[in-house]
Length: 98
Image (tube, rainbow, N blue to C red; front, side, top):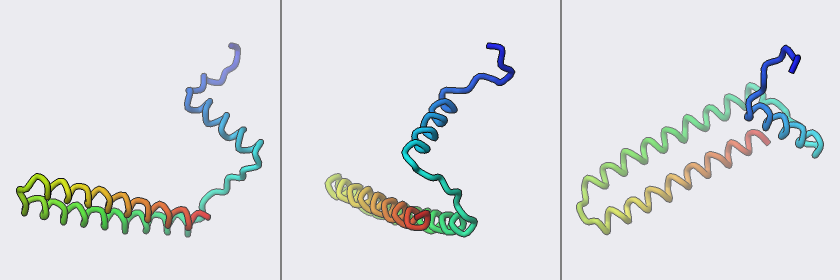
């Protein structure tokens, strides 16, 4: 190779192929506005706080019980609630970017 350009990483090559495929499919990438960035940051902060609160409450509930069956039920509820909050957060972020 006589090019003066450095070799591209596999990541860079893959991203070029994806961009080219998007261009061929007519997908237009528009950068986020400052207002959208601020709204997304706010949403992430709010949901991070909700998840932290949920974690603290979960630890208290687990300390209060010694029954393995009840602990498993608490863990299952905790997991479902985390998934619900994450899904809700992602849906709100998607709405901001649309």
